[in-house]
Length: 578
Image 1 (cartoon, rainbow, N blue to C red):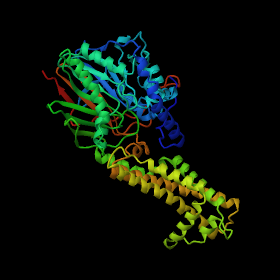
Image 2 (cartoon, rainbow, N blue to C red):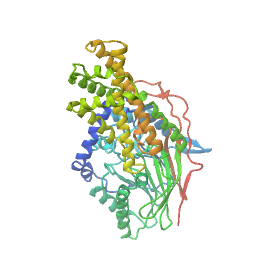
Image 3 (spheres, rainbow, N blue to C red):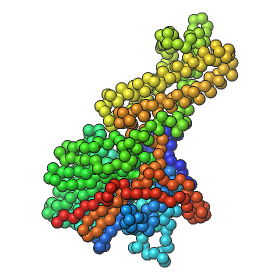
Image 4 (cartoon, helix red, strand yellow):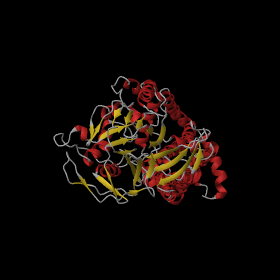
């Protein structure tokens, strides 16, 4: 399959920001009116997929993939191997591959799926002709959507994953965006579609309630796959609204099962959305243990872990304790310092803000002439750049701005835009975070007027250029684009570094800014007669020197050996209870 190798998504690229923002708003506003999950009820998927006839089963779980080629292909190539070795134990490739959400970034256009997901996975594990391998022997693929898959209302998701197509040599099975798998040894794997932070739709809830009421037996054990780590967001924000929606779904199944005296236990909840590995062990008030695992290391930029709570309590008094993270807290903090290089990672964003500064300066200069016939820059150039003249400069600015609505509006838009950029979902109290955003916005406005002052003095007094010379205006623009843009980025980087390291917010913006490709992970799960074993596999560094030794139509990539290891001291073992 011919495809284009894509770099990591530049989330602060101006065109990308606008495109993704528009699609996100449209999806949220109109998603509830065009919910394709309602139409999926007409698709034939009444029976759960029965895989219970096997003595043992291997399952691979990966989430948040389909971003840059190097990390996405590295992970696909590793999972496609016949087996991998961990702690002197051979782990065969999964009989099932479960993708846990956000299969593509930034938005789900068909060309993005092709270049960022299908192309790498087809090349990593090419389709084996049915003459050599029957369909029933091919590893099966099950997929739940994340918020990025939902930006087109699941149109392309349904086309790729719900019509019996293949991804490489993994063969899709489902007809809906959710599924139920009956596994060996009284285990079930349920994949649910939570749409865009919404409630579980009625047809989906009815489907799972019917499965629970008709198929569950007392003592069954559940692996639940969802697209959001509700426990993390709840513990860091103090608001467990999403957790309550998930619990409503679980309790609905529980009540349905109890009608048939079928009592089950949620053994494991798997999710992505946060692009790291973390595991909490949850202990209910009745003493039952559940594993809460975030494994969002399939290919997207790395999310930090140091903002995670070591321990917390749920509203129902259940308690959770953090057992492992990848990267660890120290590695996470060290990487967060990369935000200080913000202008070098995100130069187009810095130039965009610098262009706004140039426009503001242009309007100020062209619309304001003093009673003595001098322009704003000429008036400012008469003030030596020193602390003693700050009051005089502020007075000049105020007199100018109050008589120029367009300048006031531009300043207000810039100030409020930066203020409302503040992430108040995680970390300290909202007003403390907004105070940090206020200082950030103030610093950016101050930066603008400091450079106007400096360039006015430099161009007019030191270089002795005439204010009306085209060369002077061009020089001012270049100065503002280079030095102004650089300082804008430095201020942005300082703000993000302080936020993510001290205030513990802006986890998303403070990591998407430098787009670190490392610290990837997936889960290899073994279901045997006596226990369920989870092997979290991680890579600190991905392979970056992949070379195509095949053809354009049938690419085959070779590169350095992938270095991986078990992320915890030992595998996570869940022994069967009688």
